[in-house]
Length: 340
Image (cartoon, rainbow, N blue to C red):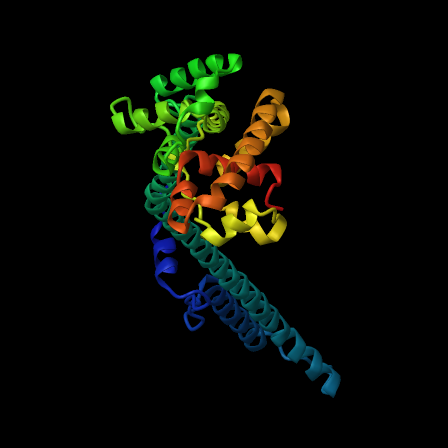
């Protein structure tokens, strides 16, 4: 950009609207020329008057004096009129130049401030854009992690040994044996422990309770149905250990065992995990195998708990309600509308 001339710098330093007007007191070339020509004219008229011969038949009327005055003064008036016009033109030209210089100075100042503002704002804008891009990358990474954790389950629903044990016992029960009917009743604590399945492959107490429960015909039916549902749910990344449902009071469980349905037992559907509910509902609609397994599990659990409630105390009912099998019942039952 071309640097402004000194006139523009002067105009730039002055407040807007207070430009210095050119001085009107000095005499310019037009005024001096008018004065010189006027003096020459007056001298020429005076010389002509003094050197002219005397008129014998002069006209002494007022018309002669008027003509003489006009002849003397009119050229002087015209000279001064022209001088004033030239003076006005000169003043206007100077004001125009000063105004143009001021405009150039203001334009230069505006461009300078705009460049400085852009230079100051550019780093902050770049920083904001980088923060937005980083937040977007984090969000995409979180979504990818969430999807991969749901679609690729990192752990089985129950230990593989427990699943094999339940599957092997299912084949044995299809034949039926009289020794099962003659076996002693299953203790309540072992039954509740079996409904929770072994925690790990080293959980000897859990495996012992599971083996004892699988020898009981009615208990084994519920455990096998629960094992099928837990395995299918784990395929969508839904694990009962991750659920933290609202625990219902024992009296509500008793009302359910006695046939109450709807709002009276709505507290049994205490699962609040929206993702698990949505995935289970979608699986229930789209997968007929899961739907059949879920309804079979709900029937078995209903039959089992109806008999269990008559002999169990409140603490035993609360312990059963905290097992993996009971949590699966809460989740699947809420999706199926059991508590509506």
